[in-house]
Image 1 (cartoon, one colour):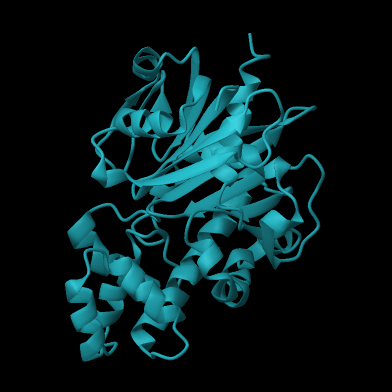
Image 2 (cartoon, helix red, strand yellow; image 1 turned 60 degrees about the horizontal axis):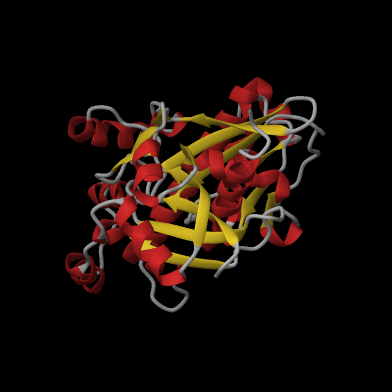
Length: 333
C-alpha cells in the first residue's frame, strides 16, 4: 500500500486488533484488519512491527484504545503485562502523531457513527437528542465510558467504573459477595461481569449446590481458560448443563443492574450501549434477562423506562473510533 494510511488499534487483555484506514477520507470500513493473541507477544510495539511489515504500509498517524487507564501518554493494560508509551511508539515506528486512549473511549467515539446494521436493540426507549450516552463493555474485563454533547459534537470520556464495588440486591447476590470477599478482598463488578468474572459465578453456584456433570468437569479441567467452556455450554442447544445456564442468567442479571447504575449516574437519556466481546454472543439471554434489572431502580425506575439499550454488534467499532480520533488530530491545535 503506497498511500498514507491511519493505523488504529484495539488493545485488550486477550487479543489485540490492528487495522488500516484511509487517511484522506472519513473512516468507514477498515481496509484491512488483523488480530493477534496479546499474550503471545512481548509488547504492542512488536505487534505493530509485524503488522506494518506485512502490509508494507506508510503510517504517519496512529491511535490505540487500551483496556486500562491512560494518563500523560502512558498506559498499563489492566489484564496484560504491557506498558505502552506514546512517545516510544512515535520514536520506534516513525509516527508523527499517536493518540493513546482508554479502549472504551475509542468504542464510545464510534457510537455516533454507527447505523442500524451495527446495532441490536435489547429494550426500546425514547432517546433524548443530545442526551448523555453510556457505554458498558464486558469482555476480558468490564469497561465503562460515556459521551457528553458539547453543543456541536459528542465527546467521549473515560471511566473505570467497572472497578467500583459490587452492590448485591438479592439474598443470592449477598451470598455471592460473601463467597468472593475472603478470596478477592475487594469485589468489583469486573470480578463478576466479565470474562474474568464468569468462572467466579460458576464456582459460586457450584458451592451453592449446583450439579456439575462429569463430562463438564473433565472439559473444564483440560481448558486453559474456563470461560469459553462455560459460555459455549450455556448456549449449546443440544448439550444440557444447568449450572452453565444459571451462570449466564446470573451474569446477565448483574450486568443489567450495573448498566442501569451507569445510566443513572450520568443520566444517560441518549441511550445505553453494550459493547465488548460477550454481548453479541448472548443476545437472546440479554433480551430476556437484562431489561428487568436495568429498570429496577426504585423511585427512579420511571427514568430508566425511557432509556433504550442496544448492543454494538459491529466488531470493528473500537477500531473505527480509534481511527476517528487519529483523524481529529489534523484539526486539533
